[in-house]
Image (cartoon, rainbow, N blue to C red; front, side):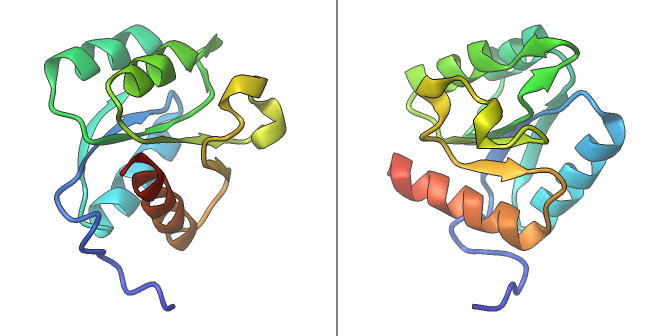
Length: 128
């Protein structure tokens, strides 16, 4: 299937972005916007991400693993507690994740928009 941009299943989703590298966060925002999503954040710290999660409507999330030297697992746990889908976007790959999170979709940086789209759709399907 060709990547034609927006996807009906992604259209209008509010996606929390947790990424501490500004350039990567901007690129991720652009890709999500092109896919029809609304971006919440981005959060560059775990505490900021948790505040956004408590204060904003969030439908899904894209999480970098290492946020300013802190692992993002508290955010992943908060999302899981709410039953919300999320994916990890990391340079460490699936091997960099703690065992209990390895069943989640992982995008290895750098990645193209089509891979982000597929991971988002997979994550939504698993949650739904």
